[in-house]
Image 1 (cartoon, helix red, strand yellow):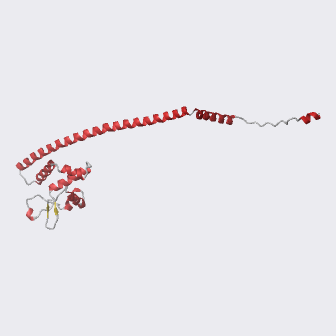
Image 2: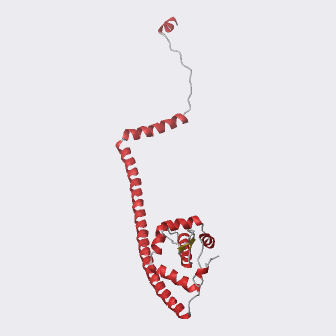
Image 3: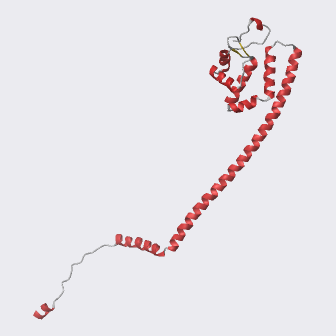
Length: 211
């Protein structure tokens, strides 16, 4: 819960680091790390060194978390967004408007200021999105070009392999004939029935003379 000291009556409430962590779903360690990076800065310090965060600081912490979780921004990218002047104006206006300690005339002035800052921010975002869209279209065309080139190389490699095999067969006719003969001979051997006949004794001259 926000704390307000006796001398702070009439001023916007401030929050301790533990309260900010609880309200935003973060840890005090994360908040201190963001402070080291310069992403957030406590509104004030008490005499004991206790950090005090304003509602504007709370809005900034919430924005950092949303940029990280919803859009996947890195902390470096978050810093670029937060450095936009329009963001700071909107956070300041929202903090002062929600506090409720101002009259109708001031609230109207704050709303006018917020409208102007928000319109500028929208224009800047539209320009950024247009550049991102153009870059994406360029990458999509490049992807098609790369795949077409890859398919061409694959077809060339396959064609070269078939041509090399044909040339090898034409340049080695003996190997080709030997291969066919080997296949044919092996077939005949497997299909031929081998028969063994008794050997006929030879007549000798001596036997003929004796008869």
